[in-house]
Length: 302
Image 1 (cartoon, rainbow, N blue to C red):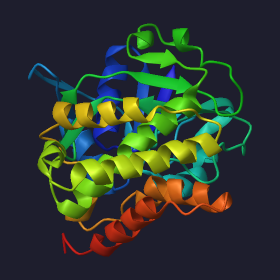
Image 2: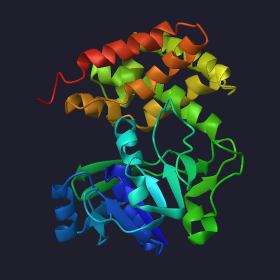
Image 3: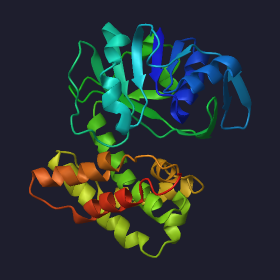
C-alpha cells in the first residue's frame, strides 16, 4: 500500500525508513526543493536507537510537484502548517484515502470533516532528532496510538500493512490521550522555551514545581470542560518522568525559538486558554505562558 508522509521532519524521516522496511510504498513530501533533491541524491540515512546507521531510497516530492495518489496520507507537519496542508490534500487523496493527523496540541477546528476521506488522529511517544535534511537519529523508542475523534471505532485497519501493529495501536479513546499529551506539553514546552533550558534542567529550576503544578491544574480543568477526565497526580508524575527520560533533549518549542520560527504555543497553552474562555474561565498561567513564548519568538536565530 502507498503511504504518503507529508512533512519531512524528524518523525517523518524516521517513519519513511520504517515503512520502507515493512514493504510499504512510502512517499515523502518535503517543504523545500532543496531537501527533496538531497534525499533523491544521497538517500535517507537513519541512525537507529542502537547506533547502527541505515540508508534507503524513497520517492520524494514537494507540494508543487505532481503528486501520486495515496491509500493513507500521514500529515506530519507542525500545527502551524496544518491548515495549508489541508487545502492541498485533495491532490493526494482519492475517495477511499485515509488521513492520519500527527500533530501535538489541539487544533480549534478538530475534528475535521471536510473531504470524502476518513480522518484519524495519532499520539506518539517516539523520539527522533533530524540531524540534516536527509539524516535522522532515533533518540527514543516509543509507541503510537491512533483513533477517531469522529466516532469510537478504535483505529484504522492496521493489518493492511503487516508488521505495523508492532508500533501502532488502535485507541477508541484517542481524545483522552491527546489531552494527556497536551497537558504534559503545556508544562515542558513553554518553560524550556522561555528559560532556554533542556528538558532535564527544568527539574533543577527553583520556580518549576509551583509553576508546573499550576499549569497542570488548569489543564486538568480544561480537559474536564471537554469531558476528558485527567488525574493531576498522574500527570505531575508523568511530567517529571518525561523530564528525566529526555533530560538531554531540547523541546520542539525551544528549537523553534532558537531558530527564530513561530512556535506551536497557540495550539498547546493557547488551547487551554481558548477552552477556558468558552466557559468564562481565565486560565491565567497558561495565558501567561502564551504571552511569554510570543515575547521570545523571533528574537533568536536571525
